[in-house]
Amino acid sequence: MHHDAIIIGGSFAGLATATYIGRARRSACVIDTGKPRNRFAKHSHGFLTQDGSEPGAMLSAARDQVSAYPTVSFVSDAAVSVERDGDGFVVQLQSGDTVSGSKLVLAYGISDELPKIPGLAEHWGQSVIHCPYCHGFEFSGQRLGVLSVSPMSTHQAILISEWGPTTYFLNGSPMPDDETLAKLKERGVAIEPAAVTAVHGDGQALAEIEFDDGRALPLDALYLGPRNRFNSDIGDKLGCAVEETPFGRFIRTDGEKKTSVPDVYAAGDITRGAHSVTFACADGVMAATSIHRSLVF
Image (cartoon, rainbow, N blue to C red; front, side, top):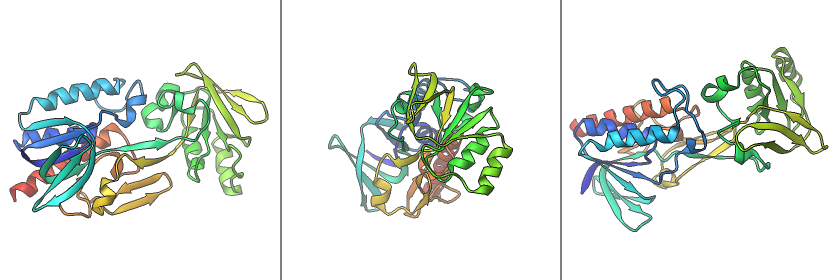
């Protein structure tokens, strides 16, 4: 079957795209590996009507609802390559099968590259977190920390102090310049220069952060802004223009979520520096309506 659109990625951006294409009575095939970025989090916050819901349950309900549209189909597989085929595309799957379509939507998301500090990965999405708007309210007024991982970490430390008493862990990196130190002091941010060797807790809740000099400090939540990477290189292979940021790359899109490559759209975390379920869904809606208009006109 030749589809109107092939959507690579079945998390929030991909499912929102499929919903609107399905409602326009056009055909879409969603290719998904079932490994969304927020699978490590127990709760998702900030999305209207779903505040505090479990991300996996949200995706499961969304997929059930999208599946009700007869023109939308799903393939549980990984897309490994894409080739032009006349006016459309053929997607090669890991299984060896292929899927063809007129338009292509890249919504395969990103993965976070955490520093290799014992305990970080085990607490990621629980009490080692990135976005204060997604998880900060739940740690309001508690003992907060920010781990230095990039030049932007000082900005994160200044921001996080809005939610409670904050310590900026330099982890052996150089002391900030005088202007930045003044801003941190103004916000009441404490500075700990020692290198971090581990974080400890019960697997969800943090208890303390340990340093290379043998000291440890009690801590309830640790923020960091890690670099991230695309979950697929298909956009690169297609020649989609990208932007470089301190946190990683994102695919450049216009207001209709079109990439620099004709008939290729992108949505979700791979297209922006700010990430949330709300942004991802909005991107998917815009990509879908843009695709439908292009098919009509």
